[in-house]
Length: 202
Image (cartoon, rainbow, N blue to C red; front, side, top):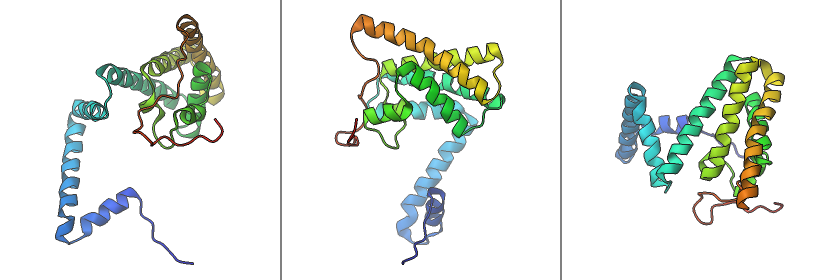
């Protein structure tokens, strides 16, 4: 048996900083540049938002998609802020509620949706269509507003609310699909060609 020393990302970056070789200088300059940019963004969060928008532009996202993605993230943040303040634990319990909302409005779990799109570690929302983002937002908005109205506290109470909130967006999705004949939830993604994983049992 051979023994290997494993490093996480912070450890690797710290290792690069400690290398005295001139060949490491470009990496050290890059780390200094990134550190400076993050300090500026802490002082002015708008700079961070613009950097995020620019990254999405480079990936080929439209301005309309970017606006919807960022609006949806704000809605999501308000919901998770409510959970955190009302005895829902970050991590597993957040994931349980998120999946409940998603499954209720879309008809598939988060994992099934990722499989449909051929995703592995990628963020599902970064590969949603405009329509998928639009229906995710009201599902989460409805959940938060109902939770606030009912003063839902803890996981059991918020699970009930999550199903109700997701159900509101579900009914809207079904009605739209009946009018257009097109499914909202699809396997479309923004992965580079050939990067989607193969699904053996879709």
